[in-house]
Image (tube, rainbow, N blue to C red; front, side, top):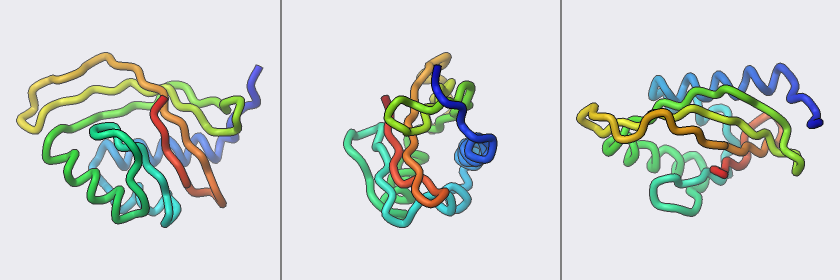
Length: 120
């Protein structure tokens, strides 16, 4: 059995997803370290730092609109926080590209902020 994720961390993660779904980039960036490594789900690899994440999302939002809803949050064996999310992806014109997709996200925290984000 895995160790439970503290309520404070769960609330922080849920707020980050809500801000992302609203397109509120600044709120999400406030929860990330300035040197964050963020998985680039569109092109592969990672983008780095607040500028890299902002640029990535601006490009992404021009092409697609993703809604991600966290459903299960647990501590992974390696200490990262694993989040099972339901993801719906629409094209920029609103047509459905992906629905009912489940994805596992992994977060590494440093001093209460996300320092790395990976897609499993």
